[in-house]
Length: 185
Ligand SMILES: [Fe+2]
Image 1: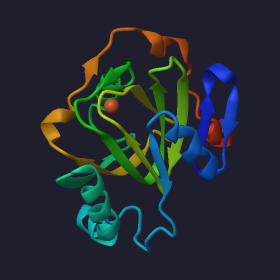
Image 2 (image 1 turned 135 degrees about the horizontal axis):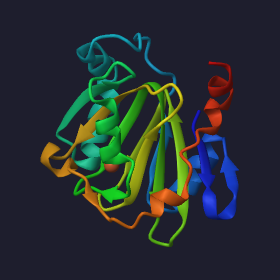
Image 3 (image 1 turned 90 degrees about the vertical axis):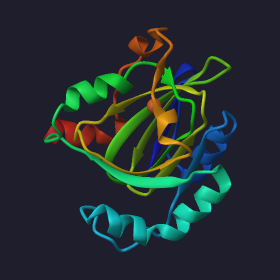
Image 4 (image 1 turned 30 degrees about the vertical axis):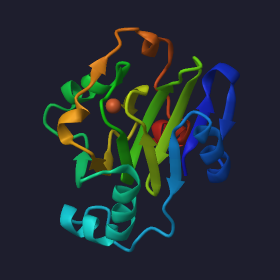
């Protein structure tokens, strides 16, 4: 289950419906896809895409997405730190950032148009849609692993544009749901 923190207000939400409502105010879409399909989280990409095909097709229709893929980022990924460094600074894209989490964890920070900063920790079963143009940045959690389904309107639009605001430097990339993991591993 995701954890949403509205950092300026020191408010934390752990209930899926509350998270959905609180994020909708800022134009961010959050859903739990339940029950998750019985496919192993290390299954080949085509099996994952096939298992979730009805959800993917519904999303494509809603958001005009034309393609979907599966990415796997883990401590063994070559160039992991360089890859992460592209996304842990405030940026935006010319298309939506759509992620359904299959395994692992991640932490999105959203810098809203009203100036609030939201921290959204995601894990398996969470869908997040960050609309094009939204200022955000992303970090992995202590497990340094995330496997997600991604959807694209046009993969060329997913290049990051950096704001160079350095707002991201004011926020620790702490995954609250991972505290136990971090302390015991
Ligand atoms: Fe991004």
